[in-house]
Length: 352
Image (cartoon, rainbow, N blue to C red; front, side, top):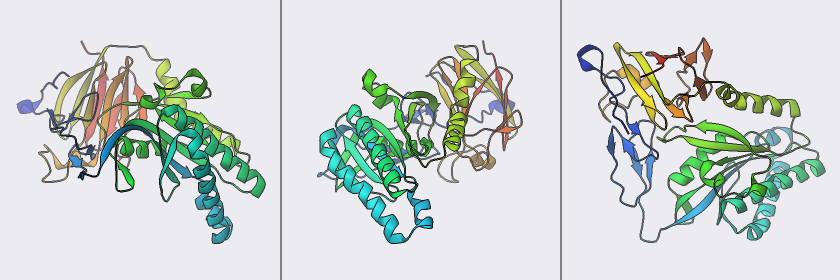
């Protein structure tokens, strides 16, 4: 990973206080985190949070599935609490019954829905399909709006004390925010192990950078039918989510880009090559050196993925703008684009 160059007055580089991003979240502020077996959880400032692992805990490669019985909240507003609880518990009961045939394990019930683990990604994808069928069947027979959102990710998982821990679990939880009603989202780690039959129906959602993780994650998504979910609303959601990918397909590919910045009074430029990512953000006072307190108000990532430069909004509260429009989660950038942050701008140049 090439180091970021410095320029501007007195060599100030506003990118310097922030972690460098490699292919996995194991670097912050340009130096590696000591990996001693503990799963490292990064917060949005790149500082590691370590899980304390007791001798009773063990680690395995598993597929983690987060679910959200998405209609349950609205269900409570329309029917009695007893009826709503009964429906949600019925979903959980049927999922438990189906798990053995998919080599799955029930970890715990969360506020959103069951947290599950599987021996292989294919088992998880097939069980996700069964969960959608369960919700679809209940929606039809009970004549009510009940559907699920599912997130699937594979990797090393720490087992112990009746729960699962680690970066794999944390990323799967972040992934759930992408899934719409009646949808399943799968990361590239799980996707790579799927056969053609299990990949059927999925579409390429493209790259994502999740807050707290210094890496680009490729995501695929699949929609499942539900008779009571408004088809127009679902299609609109899918169009909005897929629009950045369609836009990226029309852009010319480049191996290198140059980011010209004017942030918090510092100016200069850095280059970004294929497979590299740079974070723009700050930290809580006292956690690490920050050149300007205003930088803590925004967090974004710039990454080159398959020849296209992307910007990712990791915070959302302050917001990023491009061509006068708010960037929702991510956007591919063309030469000449200017990204507006609360503390300044970053312009895209062609590079060397």
